[in-house]
Image (cartoon, rainbow, N blue to C red; front, side):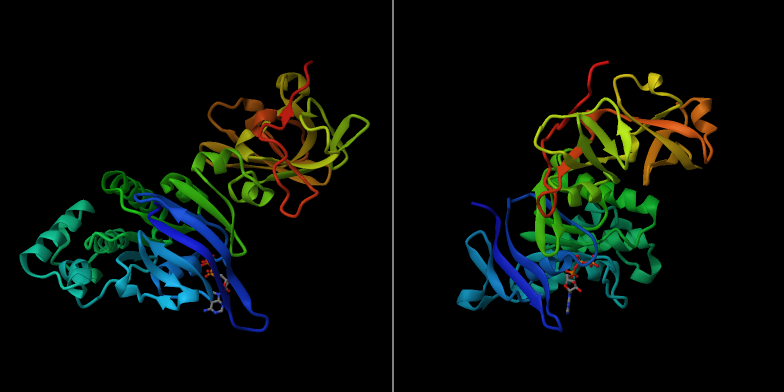
Length: 381
Ligand SMILES: Nc1ncnc2c1ncn2[C@@H]1O[C@H](COP(=O)(O)OP(=O)(O)OP(=O)(O)O)[C@@H](O)[C@H]1O
């Protein structure tokens, strides 16, 4: 049996017009699983989390943990947050400023009636897990942001909850610290195997932490799968865009010739014969640049003109106009030759890519479904 089961969860906020924040969500979470809800602002991530916590009441649907019903609109059951054994970690840390780290971490135990030496031992164990054992007698104001977030993580773990909810917990930290806390969280999950739902709009965070990623759009799951699946086989163009396949090339095939924005594409055959119009999606990292087609043999190619080239340390971001499109190629700065490093606006280039790395989407359905998993093959020279 699944650990957590969510059925037909629906939440609308009143207003003119009303907002549907979550739209008939169904999903199951296994014990020990780390689920990440990924999506842009306003897609319903936080509302889903708050319904799981009991901080928000859904209009309809049901949520259960093991055999216990947390929420069931038809039976008018809604357990309050304190009756659901959950831990929570917020973006804003939410520590009590007048309590020491020891008391902050122990707060959930106090609320549940665990006291004395047992409580003291649990607090020290939780602090040790997040490397805060030496900070127990400080106050939150005497800690860095990263330390405060580790304390709030310890507080969420201390009562050994059935579920830990994370609402963008890393987004207040600077880039370096964010990577450190993320790595720490990943290690902790591998060791402790707690069940988690983690909300973020950062795709790299989602890919790094999740056992399964649920990409949300307008209150629904557009795709739910392993990080590898979502990264390699985005089910729709929406997911492709969100997961980094940011180059969008609307293509049309007429008399056997494929064009993007009126410019002929060479070395491209679509595996499906049914689509004369489709959209190609490809990551900036998967585009190659060369002065002529001959240097890109075996790849699909299209001619363009450099708009700009920006040095990013390890990589160069080169923007290329192809007809009316603006493509973004990210190429390795160290291994690239002098020709690529010297590229400037106005110069002609050929853009190439391995067709296996592109994804093709049909235009016929709303949401543009993936046409085939490996839709493209290069023609032989
Ligand atoms: N209390 C509220 N009253 C009215 N509308 C709300 C309320 N809370 C959320 N909404 C609306 O519900 C939708 C989903 O909001 P939600 O906060 O769940 O999105 P989110 O994906 O978490 O976004 P963000 O990343 O910005 O936090 C949005 O359109 C939002 O404006």
